[in-house]
Image (cartoon, rainbow, N blue to C red):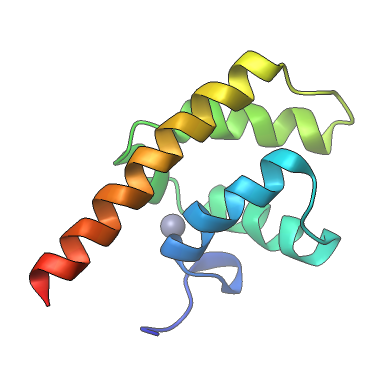
Length: 94
Ligand SMILES: [Zn+2]
């Protein structure tokens, strides 16, 4: 790996692990690291047009609210596209 970003976690890992965050399947430490990363590294989401949605979701989760399924669904769909595109680019670059 190329080293860690804000929160001790890479942008790529954040994008991958936000899936778990959405489903509350990640452990508290990982959730904390994702949240810390998003606080310090908006660009990694902004470049995918995800910043506002994901930050809204994180705020809800951390505030004890239940995120609406429609919000989770839209973010999940968007992340799926991002991950596919990123993987595709890496394969082509290699
Ligand atoms: Zn980032």
